Length: 620
Image 1 (spheres, rainbow, N blue to C red):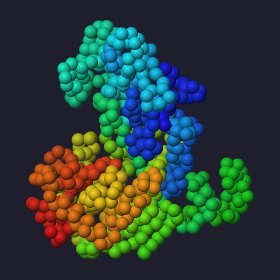
Image 2 (image 1 turned 180 degrees about the vertical axis):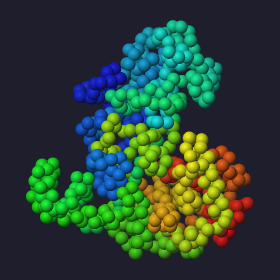
Image 3 (image 1 turned 90 degrees about the vertical axis):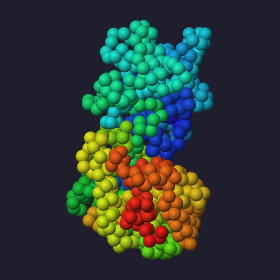
Image 4 (image 1 turned 60 degrees about the vertical axis):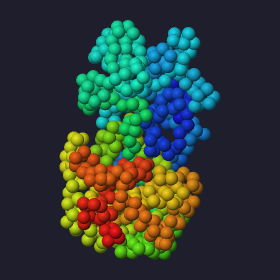
């Protein structure tokens, strides 16, 4: 449950007194990771708030999540100062601190537009947090009685992650002005289109239509970005030369989470000491001899870590050596998919790894033995997702150290912990035959289609000020991703799960990039037992999965929007998908790992005028 920071407080005041904490609403814990984390405007029933940065959470209830592989990747990306991943545990421990944002309110009776802390509005508390609201005291338009106030639904943001209140005075007066008179926001006519929305100064009479705050007119109508982060109120404004854009409260492009996730894999037997060394590896990785360790143990480590009381230098050195050797065997720290691929492809008949992992290998689906190498049914799995940062206006691309600075920060200083969420579920892993995939990749029509999609990526990048084909995952990925969507839609109709509750992980890698991968994992993930009811695993049996895949491919052959869908050229509109649309291939964005990009059903099934592209061509 979020807790509200009183808007009448000065920005430099904190949350020290209990009477400054007002419960104002409820959201799910997972929402902090995907749509409502620090810096994300949350539209409550009566006003809007923004969760504050992690440094303002203080001693709020959180529980540590143990997932060493993900923590190691997070440290590689965000710095070794990150010590733990933590999951917020909810209202019982005090909730999450928030501040009112946007900071401007509009009276529903007299249309007064003013700041929440201007003195015209008061927070009216209620024992039911969903009924807490702002009121305009002694509203002249309501006979001198209190009237409800609602958030001003216009804000400004920039591509560098800054977010600010809409510059109402600057906008209505067309620049800097000494007039600071009261403002009024109203609409004319029956339509709520922007050209019918006006802001007017009651003192000098200046007024302006909100239509000029969008598109090309906005370039001349909006001031320079002030470099503000409303979730970090004590952080000094940053210098920013990015162009401001007007955004609406509730718009999906105001906050995109930057996340990394991993599946909990069966671990080799380890001791408590080894697990401790792995968790605190940044402190031990530079120790190069047992002699040096003896000195450091007595002078430093025992004082810092109570867990080392009674541990000998020899035992600690052996644990360090063991962890170092195992890390050398593992993949690069930020490569989270390869260890999962190796585990899933090496399941013989049955593999159990405690309460979080149970996998069973079955035969390929009937009728698809030519293309499918194996199927693994995951009766139990656990996924952990960490929030690394967020972006505004444009969704984040794949992990790229050069792009990391454009992420908006979760804290003023480098974070020592990051929010995370763990869910449990079940899934179906399908491995494609590498030899068949390789032969398909060598077809001339496929190579030509690869060039077309790469050119579309180049056009996409060009509209965003980037060069080349950065971000394009390759034609292998597009094939697997499209097939994943087609099968996911079919599974949703048969499994009892909604399409939004099934997620995907795509394992795609070319031979020249390391160990080749060609597989997909479709799985459910829920915070409770609803994700492990067995409905998905049952559909992975060979006798059931084969007909389902056949139906999925048959449906993909014809789209309700054909011929527009099958003839779509991504180069013409700088999009990142070929023959794909909502009617045939798109799924909920909570399910898709690429935001419904990099899809093309012409690569999967034969389509008119796309000869030689279909991977499953001989089935038609």
